[in-house]
Length: 145
Image (cartoon, rainbow, N blue to C red):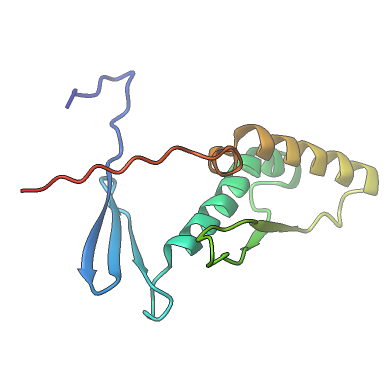
């Protein structure tokens, strides 16, 4: 592994470790953890839920600068996300997001302009959403001992 330089930040490593039957912990080299499992395991996210949360979080982060600049750093936003799985084909054919914002202090024209800029920002820089829309090649390699 190449040592990072001052111009090159350290690459975050990600992995998932099995902790029980249909139960895993996702981890990062930055110290973050997320509990993952099937729907019948309490206190965990399913992989599909994490996918949807990643899409919603990416939309929020992609719009954060634009919204904070116009609404202030302490603006409230909730992004609700849903999408039922097609179990016959094992895909999520649609993911729906609803961004909840209080724009009551803006006049209708200013609110509409802001929403247009937010939508453009999400379409332009939300890597997760763009990847899901475009599709991504996923390669699995199995190392054995």
